[in-house]
Image (cartoon, rainbow over all chains, first blue to last red; front, side, top):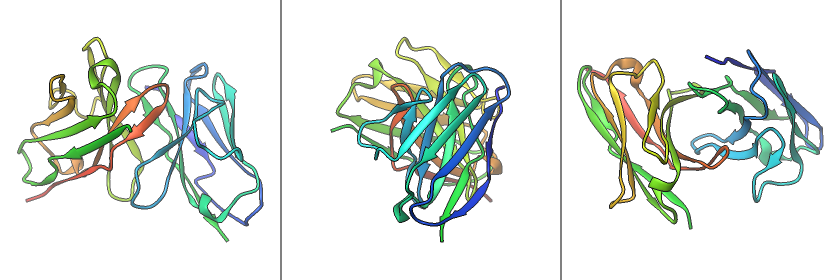
Length: 107
Length: 115
């Protein structure tokens, strides 16, 4: 099973700050890595697919990069509405797995 | 408009069975990879199962042999049959379409396994 490890687990940030969340895979997964945003009592929403492809309708301040084992989600100029938990997810090999999540708090 | 609506959750005793449904609209379930993902209260996301467009299936080890994913093409609906339920199966269960990342998710249905 491929283990995805996100860092940090929690981050408190101020609006307009730049945020970087990392996801490290226990073995190479190519670019089969996706990022989701989940707000309390809501379903997850796809932000980035295949490491760097922005999903339709997602604000341009969200971007992704990486390949192999190391991936990054970047949020430029954070907004208050970005307070949420962010998850990475791999579909390179079964069983598919998710990272443990990174909770972003807005100060 | 693409929509996924889950139903069938509820309170069930350990050892019991439950069938979850995920009614789809705006696309054809049988032409897509469809997944179930669950989230225990206050915890992260856990992948449960997938059914591919060709009909093959796969399961997480934690549910293998107890859960069965299926679909009804005429109803355009995805199912998850859950048998021998355990307390640790308590979670919100989501269905999700896989189109390179899970691009559409249902609202989730809560399954509580407790005596």
